[in-house]
Amino acid sequence: MNTDSIFSSLDISHYIYLSSVLFCIGLFGVLTRRNAIVLLMCIELMLNAVNLLFVAFSSYMGDSAGQLFVFFIMVVAAAEAAVGLAIIVMIYRNVRSTDVGLFDKLKG
Amino acid sequence: MLSALIFGLPIGFLVFSFITILCALYVVTNDNPVFSVLALILTFFSISAHYVMLNAQFLAVVNLIVYAGAIMVLFLFVLMLLNLSKENEPKVKYGWHFAAVFAAGMLLIILAASLHKSSEQIMRNPAQDIGMVKSLGKVLFTDYLVPFELSGILFLAAMVGAVLLGKRDKNNETEARDSSNNPS
Image 1 (spheres, rainbow over the protein chains, first blue to last red):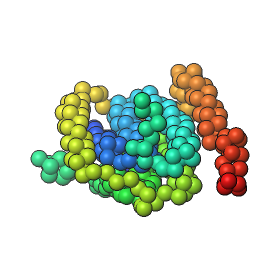
Image 2: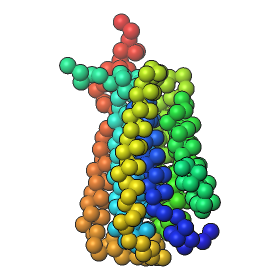
Image 3: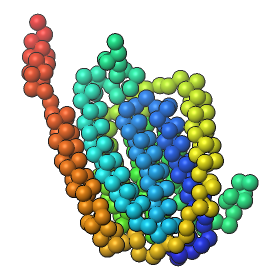
Image 4: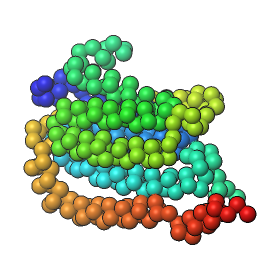
């Protein structure tokens, strides 16, 4: 596949639409799911939508700053997943469930 | 309008976009969390294909290694450790789904309407080699050296935090074992 043809034959608006759709699918998942682990996965999906948009803009403009931002987003996502999963495992030991509706111990 | 949007696009973009969106929909609608993880891995593979088409080869490989390789294996291990499957998936009322579709659709309309003009404003000078390790590394270790070192500290803090959170509390454990051994 000739990568050069992408930039001439494809407008960047298509990548904008694609990553908007991906972001909204992730938002739909965050709003509907109750399992805490699936919620983290939906957040990863939203982060990846933003990453795709960053890479698209960076490549179309010929500026490497966007791709470095994606690199740092991946760093933060990895740290977030590790700490988030550790918290979920710890809560599971106490509550015996990953249903976010049951995590109401802080409620007054 | 939709046909004008779709026809005439490169076949690689079309195929990988469909795979991406279908797998993402499968992730959020499926009841079994293990299948959700597998579909999310497929989504990351197709996003990596998009990166290759966009001349971001380094990020494509890093996306595969970090996301599909490390993070999703972590998710899969936690799912297996907690023994979660379709049976203990919490049920959601149907009204929530309509509200969520409405909210996500509104956000989609707003995003598309506010971003679709930006294609006229950006300058198009795609360079061939900005996605390679050589040029990205040069920028990373000169202009972005401080954020790079800070992300190392962030990783160290996250690692210590994850180990500390995952460690079993000694007192609770002995109490639980005592109470299970002596039912009196």
